[in-house]
Length: 543
Image 1 (cartoon, helix red, strand yellow):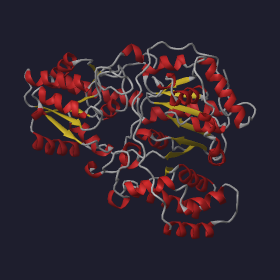
Image 2 (cartoon, rainbow, N blue to C red; image 1 turned 90 degrees about the vertical axis):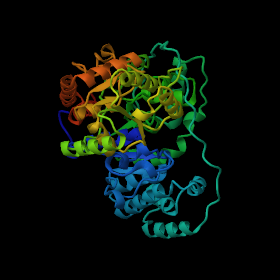
Image 3 (tube, one colour; image 1 turned 45 degrees about the horizontal axis):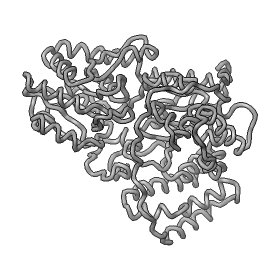
Image 4 (tube, rainbow, N blue to C red; image 1 turned 120 degrees about the vertical axis):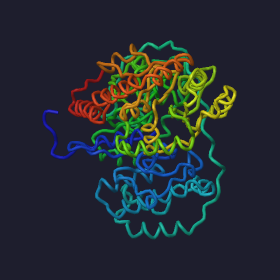
């Protein structure tokens, strides 16, 4: 920007699937930008900052969607003050209190969020919490902070203690996750003219925004209906959203969480990480919300190269951003060597392949989910049987196809060569990457997500499915991955790396150099700063 305000720009990151909001929020703590991140009503282990920063044994976390994460006293890590996680109103009110300098309410709400997360693994608590509109402290502070009363700090404390003594009625268990929706055929709809991004132009009423959004969707899909209730459900949250978003210059909505600033008429960026590949085109409630959330964004951040085609089909203003990783927590050379020695002493062997993706594969090759793990195991079996008896594969035991993967490994006769581990927090995952000779990613989509950058950062070769032509718009030079899309490719790549140590070292070093030129946190920070400042300067035109 030509003239910057004396204060820092304030950015709010909404939605923390796979810790994207936390990691980007961490990158965007600069001398010019202050970031806050909020994650409400979603508690998967990979949405917890502890998963990125703390070093703990994951074996005891229990339910992946309501994990028992060790407390800060045990791990030495506590959330930064700029992060909020809990029920929507509780988490939002915390940031409101923080932004407005209300120290006691902010402290109380922080404690309430921590207590909520600590108790969530208990199914009985979840049933009680599902019926309670708010805790006593949350209810009292909502009255005060949202302007219905003033000076409620003392009353808040009394309400809080009273609420703790009251028993709430039980509720039916929450429904499980919705089944995956098969991807549509790749016949892209014709882009319709973009409306002005949310938060620009004259102010409008909520109902006017609803009518405009429904009309926009109908223009793209005239054969589909659109129940206004799908958008009107956000109206009751507007007082809270208005107060929350008022503290920020810009909101970044991850996945489809751009729908919240859109509903509130606020300016925002939409951040995709595979979420525009199919979802905005689906004839479903989520598909409708995703379509509008991306269409009305001031700009969309695209992190998967193959999603340029859907971005164009949606008529988006978009920019490519590499997948960000947490650069903290990497082991030094001595620690990596020590961990490798202990691992090999336990599982045997002399050549380690680390395969961290979730287990999800099948004949449909659903591009929303499929990782092609069967290609890896079949190729690894050939590799072992054709001259690498000392090879070991460390694979992560999670995903919908875990049982099928275990059965395939046994049928292939490589059970003694495959070692299964639980999903690993970032610090422990980085130890496994550093200990490996090669990292095997996924073998379905010709692009990559967050796993290869971790391997590049630590100088490890990567075998994965990759199409340079798809990435020509992303980088001036391609990452030095070893291409593999089926079992034969996997076996050939592993054989080359196994038999040629010099080549293996050169590929690893080239990956590290490439990472620092094109994928580092510093590079990502620069791209984001440029785009944020461009939008806030008013240079972004409304198509």
